[in-house]
Image 1 (cartoon, helix red, strand yellow):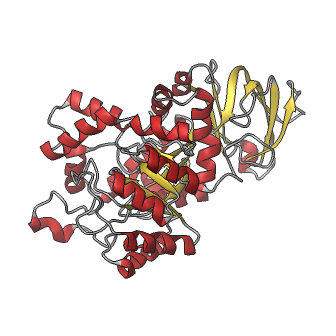
Image 2 (tube, helix red, strand yellow):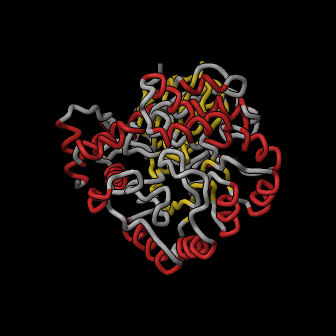
Image 3 (tube, one colour):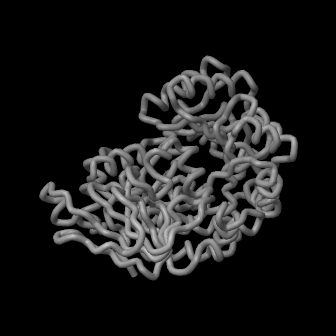
Length: 437
């Protein structure tokens, strides 16, 4: 589906697009003065008191003490009773679906790509309105997210800034082999160009995704929960090294899906930039990660999606997948309790698509539950995530020169992270998405 078709379909469906200010439509440069009661400008550092954030041309041009009066022609936004933060970052999403289990599988055979493209846009807007102005999308086999990323870049539609992996890579029979669990008769309908076996073939798979426009490379060293392929390591060192070396040679970072311990270690040895899920990290592995500077993206809130879907339908998943889900629910958080105290860098990520889009802030509560102070959880979703995604010069803090990605909440998130679930204001790259409430 072309990005033009996506845009026109969104209009035809009556999807709300936030209008640009009149000045922006005419090419004029209008300033916006945001009066903020408290500003967590650089998460991890002490907050600022009453401040004025000046925005122009989609960027922050000044952060000043007190409430500075706006000049004639400028716009003033009153957030004097709010806590203002940088736009949040989700380092692990799947924007192309908000359905999982048997429902998600069935939709692949009963709904066309055009409808799924609109679902992708819809999920992006839910994410943006929840205050997540940047996401790293880790898996999209047929290009819907790549198209949405380009449409957003062109200003055709609104959405979060997207760092996209294209199709996730694995070995034949691995977690990203979409033929697993399907009858042999339909295997020919499934795209397998994301699969690789042997170092040379793995280099090809990376180059293919980069050629499609991937900003980051994701691959799996182990099986997975949702595919029913388990914890077993399904890749060898030579394959993982070839994947990482090729990605890095092209200037792409690497995210590795890994649940089982040996698969996590394999990814760290290969030079992965982040471990996704990392469900069985032990002390030895945490120390390896801390020494190597490998980020950990825990994706704890996947369990929320599992629990909610099973409550609605006990048969939402196949028996093989249900067995692994029960295990995942029981062990969730234990790796974070080991990794965080040992100095492993934590980046915020939800696996939204398994958990629900628009509920991305639920992860904060779980990070705190399993040992992270609120200030560190917020840093994981801003400063740390921006560094991992390679966008720290663009976003992650409220400082002059950065993109005007700004959100606000009532209350104090440093005392209670649950307030981050109710955004009262969202600005993305200078455009107001959620007006002050």
